[in-house]
Length: 214
Image 1 (cartoon, rainbow, N blue to C red):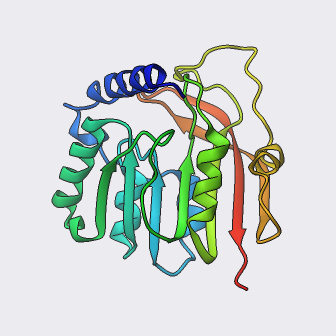
Image 2 (image 1 turned 60 degrees about the vertical axis):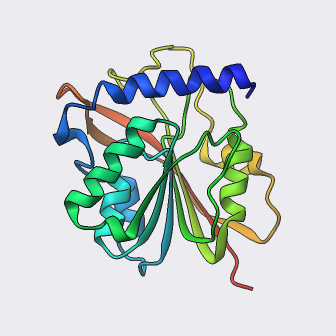
């Protein structure tokens, strides 16, 4: 992404989350269903939450003993998720950092990296970011990528011509070596509730990438 494009993306996402700023109940309200089902049986370790948004996933993980690094392009997100972590008593396990992931990436090694609905109306090297995420995994670690497989009525994207790559296509685009495997790649439907209380059936594209142990 060009410097101008990165700045434009930052302004866009800051505007989105400023709309949430005064609605305290929307910050860290609940984790994403797909993240919870994957992480629930895992032993707590170090987790990275890419584009953490209102912080529900990061706070849920920290509340279950994970040491979490949560990142987002929005300064409002960094401030409010940090405040929510302090209010929840998990600030010692949850670090929130501001990153434009097209240019910078958080340091460290992780047992779980989560990229939930990691989409943007601005072009950026998404596969490159996910490739860096896979490289940041410890042996045995998991990268969870959950993408939209359909358009929700409340989405910022209402283009009916949108094509949603399959999880297998996303994995292929990462161009990883045999050190990484793909134990899960599927489309799953669920009932979702939008910010205004709307209810709709949506499709999730779920991809899990695992780094080999040896």
